[in-house]
Amino acid sequence: QVQLVESGGGLVQAGGSLRLSCAASGRTFSRSTIGWFRQAQGKEREFVAAISWSGGMTLYADSVRGRFTICSDSAKNTVYLQMNGLKPEATAVYFCAIRHNFYPARSSLEYDYWGQGTQVPVSS
Image (tube, rainbow, N blue to C red; front, side, top):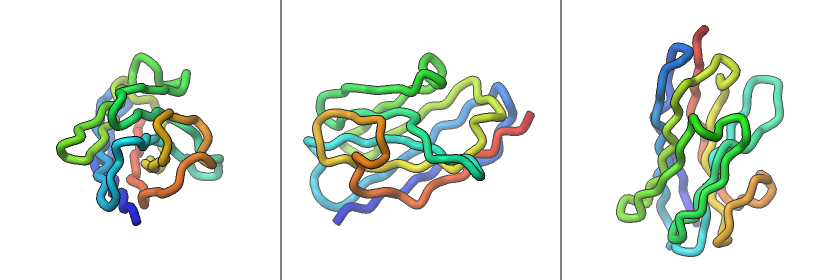
């Protein structure tokens, strides 16, 4: 069994920054990837970014590339999402998820376990 716990959410002004954390526990993750997704109220869950634990391969949604950075700390079993230049349309619940595959993926269907999510409201 795998547990994922997100933290770091909170109210931020447009143009501001926030760093989200995803702490993983349970089985080993050496050949897994972690993804970040977000879901705004009334909308579908959408891909944000993903990273492979060991290879450092990353994948970003076009809407966040250049402003968001995903990185991992294998010693802490934690993946971070640094979000800069936040816009009001980024307001959503942010989820992390794990995929037991070496390659990052954009589809939520490819991920096996999910965290409970953390709220990120961005005020204009």
